Length: 78
Image 1 (cartoon, rainbow, N blue to C red):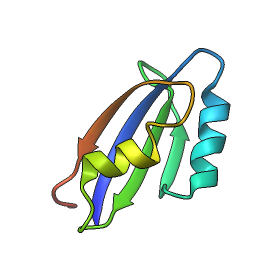
Image 2 (cartoon, rainbow, N blue to C red):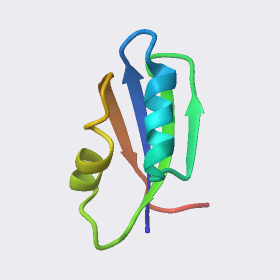
Image 3 (cartoon, rainbow, N blue to C red):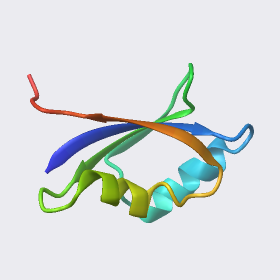
Image 4 (tube, one colour):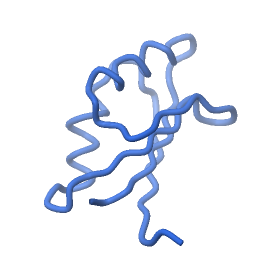
């Protein structure tokens, strides 16, 4: 499994709606509300046989009210 972090910027006032939709899809390991340039921080594990970009595009980026994302791939846990 590939551990990936996705920061999500939502349209103003829609953070809870976006979070609720992510929860319904059950693709996350952890989901946090954050301060700063992004509204949500999503931690998810993508199966090794899945393409990371396609998985995120098909399972996350079609959620309404997402304005921008920033994806961070991980390589090793210490």
